[in-house]
Image (cartoon, rainbow, N blue to C red; front, top):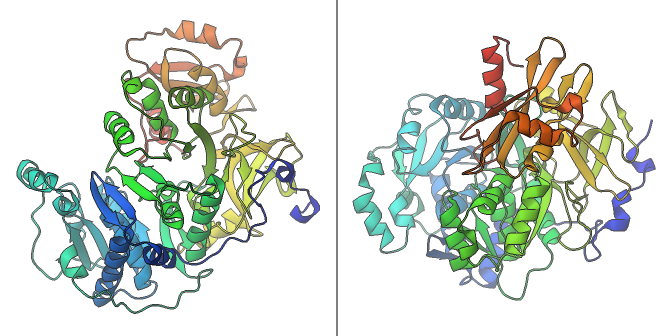
Length: 566
């Protein structure tokens, strides 16, 4: 049996010279980091939300008040508090307030349907939810009141988060979007919760054992599960990301937060990593390509974490060249594979370095990234972060580590790996074995220690007994100049068992025939990889953070054929 201790770390020779892989990253909880930044310079900009500035001192103070207010509502150590919030200052204050109170943050997507919200509330045991006074959010949660575990809703005012005069204009011109807030014991205002001196009771926190966040994920087996992220998990991962970005410049770093903070990628790379280095977060409540371009020109962010579809939208925006995007130095792409064509087009347009990283909720989430400086291999996820090891294990023998260049399951060992799944010991045992996280991704590691993801194990298509990887087909299709977006899934096939089908969105004012596409692909993929079917659509389904989603398309195809989806 091959063990990790018996194998070399091939990435050591190619590691960025100014980063020490052996760095022992501090596990000091994030609330202490926020308080230290506030004590160092409380006047420094922490959040810029549509022009309203919140300083580090203000964010620390109101998170203290939130902590005391939550404790007064009965929140104690280990109690779960749900955040049902888009990107606003409240999202940051509530996150840190819950942790200071000793509670566990449970992130919710505000766009979830009622049934999805109810299931997550029931599974996590959330007793308090924090949300906005908007009709698209508050009534959804009010329908959840009346039976355990949910006891109270804390309501934040959207207009109060906006700068003057937008706050007054919102009350007048958007009043149809504002929900009626009852005055009772079950629904309380943010103001009433934070009207105190902030002298909360400091809980005793064991950073390595106590849970800070329940991050719900489909994980490696499909059904939503709460990944238990400890205080150490999230604090260490934020510091790992900050180390990877290099020492902050003499001027204040500014991080553009378009990705939603309720998603684990933005939670760490936008929010917590910014707090670690004292950066300013420029928050937008949602992604709109023109608004994003205007914000970059006006507020001059130096970092822009995103997913491939965001960078692709900017690549395709015909007016993008009218905006000054030169302030951006670093863009980290995560959440989905970054097609080489998108990376090259974005770098050519902006002049910044766009590097692909890799992670998953179970890793808090970042496990690897291409170096910002030095060797950067297109199509790969880069090198493991400090103190993190990546192994490629044989699919048919998890005790065997695959040699360089041979594919297997990507496994991660590191201090950012979750404690397990909430109330799911069997799932935890299947996913974490011998302290290594089995990701469910298929990939290989080259001789320099760079890892390349071939595809998700669950997305792999078995054609006549051969493994066909959708990402390989997607990369080839993206090379056609008429293609804007593409997703490839497996569909049932009587002869081959499964066959690839491509769903394509074309660029505006472009046409493409199926036969022409197949002719284009003939010398780029093998005959067994050639899509059996091609369907052109005006839009392709996306997840809450804007990455292309396959599950809806798979469900559609199985329903057409009356085959139960796995």
